[in-house]
Every structure is written in structure tokens, then in C-alpha cells.
Image (cartoon, rainbow, N blue to C red):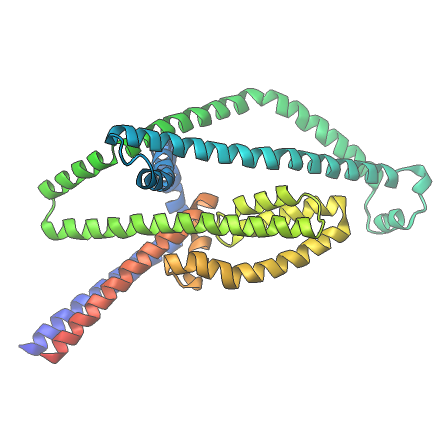
Length: 376
């Protein structure tokens, strides 16, 4: 009888393992299909998804403000004031970032274009016909004069194309603004009525779902909310530290555009691992156009800063919060980026952390059950 029970349990376990492997294989071999389905869902429900994301972001400062201030106020007044302050702080931060980055980025882009145009004009000048650089280009089969003409015609052609597409650009911009406004209103509604909505969801679950299923869903929801909150707080903290260290170090070393590059790297660092690298690459190109030597100094400083960030800052600030091994962080970012791009890269780490924590819990419970069964 005991052997039959063990065989039945073993067959169930093997069936579950085989089924899980099949599902994983289908999922990994059809990432493009999954990406298309997710893209379709996001496009259809984008205002509400955006509203949910905004609500998750604003809920953190709103909760802190509610706990620290307005303790003597009415609940509705306290909630309204907390939402307004959270929105004002977020909008103010975005305005500061744009005010720092855009003017400097515009100036740097203008300098790069001027340098490229002047260099091309000098190389195609008849006085430089026998220059070593021109001879080198000719030996490689590159005609700079025809290249310049092609570049000018390309710019003229796409300038006309750009003018013809301004209407479509305006339409897309209007759609983005409308989607954002709807999402913002939806997020404010979610934040203002989150206790009521949570109570309604619990009532529906209690009425229609078994008690065991309710407990599982509530447990998963609790872990998910805590993980997302911890990840967002720690990722923003890490981005601020990294951007500040970058900007301060560049200012001390007298590297051009310290505040712009520091802020840009801090913003891009919100995407784990790859975001900061993208920001550093843009910073290097901008500095290279102004001062090649300082660009080299910048790269050396960034390499040192990356070691400090990767070995000290990120494990302490983010790694200790999400409790996810580095290999899973890296893998989740790659997969999330392939499915949903930068947005997928940002949400891949907390999502993987949630799955990792749930699997670890389930494994621990199963091991305990197997141990108890073996002792019988």
C-alpha cells in the first residue's frame, strides 16, 4: 500500500515537472508571440496600465507623507493633500531634470554637428587634396566629396519627409498626452479609493473563490506589493547615489557637462545594469566632441565608479532588498528587454524576484513535507 502511495505521488511529481518543462519550452521558443500579445494588451489598455504604474509610483511618497504629516486632519483631506504633494514633488523633479539635461544636451549636440561639418568641409577643401587623411580615405575607396553631396541630399530629402509627417507626429503626440491624462486621472482615483477597492476585491474573492485559493492569492499579492515597493525605492536611491557620485566626480576632475551627464546617468540607471551603461556611452560621446582627453579621463573614472557601484552600492542598496542572485537579475533583464524593451527591463527584476521568492517558499514547504513523511 505504501509503495502504491509513493508511486502515485512520484507519478504526480513527474507529471508536474514534465508539464512545467513543456510550458517553459513553448514560452521560450515563442517569445516574439508573447511579446506581440503583451504589446496588443498594452496598446488596448494603455491608459489603465499607465494609471496603475503611476499609482504604484506615487503610492510610496503618498504613504510616507500621510504617516509623517496631517495626522490630525480628516481622512479624506489627508489623502487629498498627500496625493497633491506627491504629484507636485514628482512633477517638480521631472521639470528640474528636463531643465538640466535638455539645454546642455542641445548645446552638446550643436557642438558635435558643427565639428562634423567643419571637419568634412576641411577634408573636402582643395587645399587639403594631398593631406594624409584624404589619401587614406581614397586608399579605402571613400570619396569624401561625393559622400558630402550624398549627405546633403539625404538631409534635404528627409527634411521634406519630416515636414510631410508633422501632422502624424502631432497626432501621435496628442494621443500620448490624452493617454497620460487618462492614466493620471485613473491613478488618482486608485490612490484616493485604494482601501475601498481592496475591500471590494476581497469581498468578491471571499464570495466566489475557495478559502485556500484566497489565502494563496492574498499571500502572492502581499509579496508582490512589498517587492515592487522595495525595488522602486532601492532603485531610485541607487540611481540618485550613482548620478550624484558621477556629477561630483566629473566636477572635481573638471570634465565638461558634469551636471547634465550626472543627471542623465542617474535617470538611465533606473533600468538595472544596462541603463547606466547607455547613459555613460552618451556622456562619453558628448564629452569626446568637446575634449577627447577629458573623455578618456571620464571613461577611467566611470570604470572605477562602476566597480564601486557593482560591488558595493548595488548589492547593499538594491540586492539586499530584492534578495535575487545576480545571475537571475541579469537573465531577467535580457528576457524582459526582448519582450517589452526598456519597460520590460525595468519591471523584469521585481517580477523575477517575486517568482523566485514564491518558488523558494514552495520548495521549502515541500522539503518540510517530504521530511515529515520520511519520519513517519
